[in-house]
Image 1 (cartoon, helix red, strand yellow):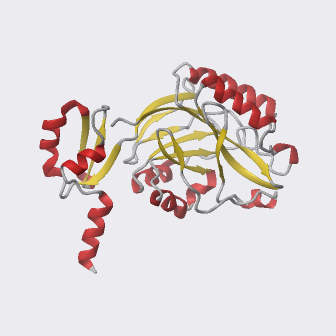
Image 2: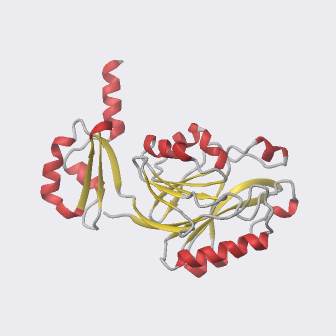
Image 3: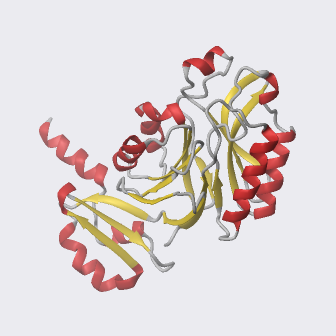
Amino acid sequence: MSKQVKICTISMNATINGNSSKEEHFKEIEEKLAIGGNEHPNLFLLPECCLGNNFDKAESYDAPAGETFNHFSTLAKQYHAYVVAPFLTERDGIRYNSSVVFDSGGVPVFIYDKAFPTADELKCGVQAGCPSPDCFDADFGKIGFAICFDLNFRTLFQNYYRKGMELLLFSSYFPGGFILQSLAFEFSCFAVSSHSQGDESVFIDNFGREFARANIFEPALTRKIELDSTVMHMDANYEKVSAIKAKYDDHIEIEQLRPEGRMIIRSVSRSVTVKEIMKEFNLTTLDDFLDANNGLLR
């Protein structure tokens, strides 16, 4: 069954030195959310430290129910959408570089704390978050989060993969480039980035392919993603493609990717799920196929 979600990623003009004031950042955020809001997304994604990165200043950090939390709560309610807002938080006297998820009613329902802060952040008192965080269960699927330097630590994404991540949201000061694409490919997840230093935010599919990129005309870039989509090995599966297409026709899409020996099935209707098709036609998941063949070598 189709699990389509519409996401708006915001590219900002912030400099790495954090020269703009919090008020100026909020003004930019509000202007760009207003642009993206015209397309009625289910979720807005903002970049790392979207209100500035003055890690050594106490006033940069906000506690739950503080001014920053309340401001983003109001925006989430205004657009009736999730807002993923990365900013500096302080909870129980501990400082974090966080991504806070506000639901469509404005309630902060999940906080991801940067698992691998940089040396400069640590020197300023920022603490590392949990190295094996949970996914967030949104009403459309399971989300994993990463902030900037996190992208270099594969164990974080192995953890998310074990927990069923379908979508990775990456807020950052650096674009991520091929690293982000390779993680999406390796862990068969969609990825969306939000970039703090210009129009380099991207959408990546669950085969590691970039399919949309922000630009000066689209700093609030909105695209739809179909999360009911599975990557499989072609062996033991490809010979069933004709029968699947014959029965389900326009309800599904199938890609056969010969160079990598993979195939992708995605549902594009509400009449059938990929999981149901896999069960009906006895399709083999990528993990099960590789595990079975690895077992032959032991």
